[in-house]
Length: 216
Image (cartoon, helix red, strand yellow):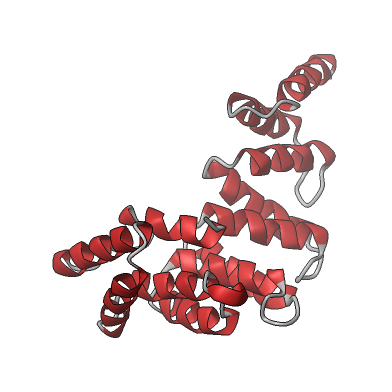
């Protein structure tokens, strides 16, 4: 099962900021997702197409995943059209999928600028994954100008959403004064958050920062 199909079968529970369709449409969407998971692809496609015509963004997104998973490497251009339709309806997962699709080069050539544009749109809609991707682009200068302050802004949003990698990166930026004012107490706060979420390097950084704070 591909990453895109794995996302599709999880749509029985819609991500944050994505309003569920009306009850009847949601029931039909759920049945179509089950049909897809159990291999009844024709029935699933027909149901998704009907729902997409009714303006259900999740159905358009699912058609995009099916296009990507098709035979012979799928049809990335058709997938893009469906994802763009879902994204226009506010479906945040489709925005992330477009970011990944443009970055992957499956449309012919990797387009990091377009990828960043979609990741930012997802981030602005409240996506933790979008915030992490947008922050990384600004931090590395990939698909965007290198802007540490913007990187810190989006890492902070991802960190607040519980992303352990963003928590560690934000702590490091506070420790170094990279894109933010140097602040060892905030560095300690975010290293501690990363430690509690399982980052293996973070506990040592907490001890190190504690020693530095005592010495000041």
